[in-house]
Structure formats: structure tokens, C-alpha cells
Length: 312
Image 1 (cartoon, rainbow, N blue to C red):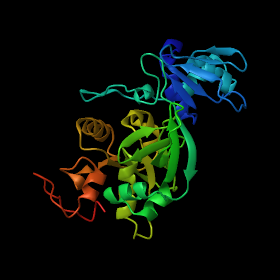
Image 2: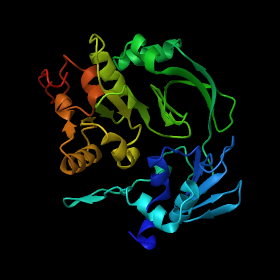
Image 3: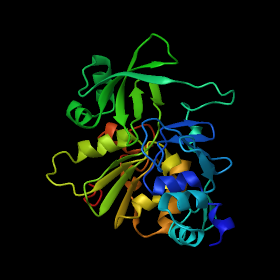
Image 4: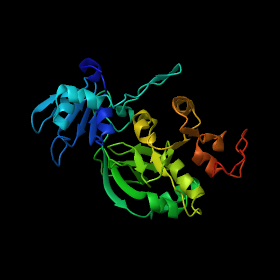
């Protein structure tokens, strides 16, 4: 790898691989707590479109190689050696074209006129008390006990308006929330994955958190579930979570039965034998939660698939 090739690697992906996630995202600008020093307010910016960084606290910036040299206090040769262990994600595999989806696709980040939808978290409760939200959990066939274990009741405002909304909140590893109620689906910033590390050598991967809650409900009577969990919260994070997933010996994928989910499933299973397709369990349904919600019923023109021990 030479300098020109190294500087084509995505800085945001590299920062993610060494454990740094953005605190806020505004169009092409990703803001971090500086990896180069201690600070309380994010002043380290990556312009993802130009693929350059700048640390406003110390007034320096540059390319990915410049960052690696500064981060590791190394010379160019040493920086290239370190970057040789970082493998950029594959976007074309076995003639399958995988579009690169950036974080700013989600509705909470800036739109084209650069106005920003602002969700402000006002209050979080450790247990779900609101009757409206409790009824919504019943509709999704999730017990209150499961929801209270993994979720919060979140009160929030939108665009600084006085009206306060309530939703089931599922927290990600960067401090943001996935917010759901019967009529509302959104995310507070920063949007990111939720990784649960049980120090296991296998992992179960879900597209959304209601699929994860359904899994917890199905397995609640089992004494020992020796697996780690990854909730992507958006398929935008699939490609940049490959390194995390592939640290495990087995990767059980519970992706949606739609075109995008099937494309990523094909990409992953062609990439490695570690990836195991678990979507056959809910064949004929959109996702695990829809199958779980309708288990024992027949949806129009659908059949409930047989449940075998290897899935549960």
C-alpha cells in the first residue's frame, strides 16, 4: 500500500474500526471527541466528502495518513504498515453490487436546505409506565418485562416545540435512541449500532430492535444464552460492522425479508461461511417480529413456517 492508496480509505470507517464514533453529524461533517487529546465537547471534524480531518482544539488536520502518524506518533512508513491491517469494506462481491449508504441518509440529519430536525430528549424512565406505550408493546407481542429490561420510556420534543411526545426508546452505544410508538418512528442523534457483549464466540445480528426484543421473548425461558448481540438500527451500518461481526466464529443473521435485506444476506454468506441465514424461520413474513406477532395465525396468502430446534 502506498500513500495515495492509503488516503483513499474512508476516515470515518477507520475511526469506527479503532473505537471512535461521531457525536453529531451534519451533512458531510462528522464531529468527534478528539482521539488526539482529552476534551468534553466534540471539536474534531471529518469532512467525509473530501475525506479529510481537522482538530479545532490544536489547529491541525490532513489526510488519513496524517491522522495515523499523529495518533500513533509514527513516521510515514510505520503509518502505512498499520493501515495495511485495515481492510476497506467490499462493495462488489460475486457480481453483487452493494451501494454505499452514508449515515446522513436518516431523517434526523440535515436535509438539502441544511435545516435540521432536532429531537431533544427531555426525560427517560427505566420502566414503561405509559398506558399508550404498554398497549403498543402488546400489539408487537413484547412483554413488559422484556421491554423494561432493554428499553426506556422516552419523552422528547421535536424542533424545539413545546409539545412532548412519548416513545419506546432503545439506546445505542453512542448514546442516541431509536424511538417507536404506534404512530411514530425516528431516531435521536447520534444514530449508531447497539452491541451487547456477553463475551461469547458467536453473535446474533438484527436489523431492528423489535426483532431483538422478539428474540429475547422467544428465548426468555432458556437459562443460558451464550451469544453476543448486534442491533444494527439501520442497514446503513452493516458494511462498517463487518469487522466487529467477523471477530466471532459464527454470525447468525436475522435480517428483513425484503430486497435490501436479501442483498446484504447474499453478500455476507458469499463473503464467509461464518454467516448463517436465520431468516428461514420467518419465511413469508417481513421480519422476525412480524412472524413472532402472528405466530399461530395465518396471514392472508401466507403460511406459518415450521419451527425447528436449530432456529430456536
